[in-house]
Image (cartoon, rainbow over all chains, first blue to last red; front, side):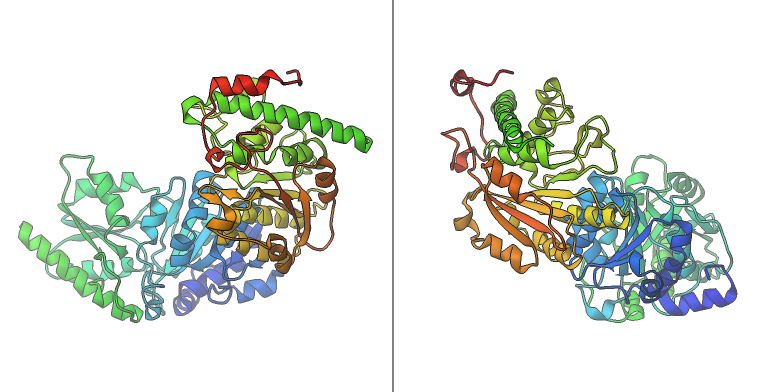
Length: 325
Length: 277
């Protein structure tokens, strides 16, 4: 059910990240017999209706009570359960920020907090549900691993890896439906290890989440204009793969970060913080949502409104690049 | 099983020691001061829990069958630490490091299972959810002997998160969960009735589906009686207490929520002390 067959890849893409999470969840009890999944009245939205039917004792629905969701998950974690907890990304992070900070951060309890509908994926519901600050929230808290998969196949990989991961983690799931496919074939996924998807010695795009796909398309557009652009999938934003970043700095004249997130405190911020330690490194272009609440709209519309479609990313890079050469 | 009169004597003696240790710890904090009021209101509750009600063993801190205690009102830390000394988790020397730099006895409890501290606290309103999750976890493990005790303040019950967890614990029928509300009637800025009136505390819990008992939180036999086992529902014990209990100038005095104790005050208070260290 979780192998990278052509049929599965197509099915996952059509299900989107939430449905794919639900499918991947079906395999969790085999990976870790201590698996429990908590949800705050988001069982069906998290694709967990099948899981709930198959494993009624492993699914705990606490109702619309996100602070209690994180607190109960922490108590269960401390008793040795492998505990996932799901709700909308904005509520998982901002609304329950204090229980997350105290239980997952300070106490280090290994909850796998799953933020559904992250980024623009439920953008029609407006700014309460558009989640473009969640990486910044979670990244600022010590001890918490932050993962943002590039596609549904990577979502499967991340869920499986987290089932055996000891510490606390935030899994950011979003994207549109159908979800563009980045990985057509099976590959090795390791938490904290970035993946180079494309070589290019002039510009390197470091991207995370569904816009990794847009970044790859942008790189191809620029290639046709004879700008050589590499792409790195930084699926784990914390801990940041600094080894991969050093390689990026050494092999590029311009570093570009692309994320479906605020330009404040996300991947761009993380890379800038790291890069600022070094003297002879390339400049950075941060592409993301520019510190405002986007108007409600569907996924593709919001990508376009915020300059995150492939042609827009290519245009932004082209402008910067032409000012440099 | 010890006769009740002996149990009460043991609790009474421990309560005196705990109260004395709170003064000693508080004195050590010097000009930084400490949370006296909300520690002193807990003393009898802690004595009864640690000396009689709870199954804990300092030689086996990770014993699976132990009862779990969560001090959700983390600012009552001095009473917890002094009680942990009574049952051998913490030495007197360690106790005297309270709030000093590099101590493990922070101003609010910091998770340290080997020292008998199950969870960190300090941010109010988070303990009941931890307790509910722990109680559910014990159930799922088939552990039907351990209970989970969560001690909260009445001011803490202002927090909405308390009521999320109260509803949830009742919904899941977590009868192995016991909440204790230290109802001392005062919070940081004054009487709870003036800051946020939560009158009808027992009725509130009852309406959320909890077994409710109201006791005098300084009466050892009432506390012992109230902390019996119940079936089917989680239990809350509303303990009517006096903030600053036992120290005349601290009692009912919001100024002693957090304050500094002088050497002269300490000497005067302890001059008449009968319990020998």
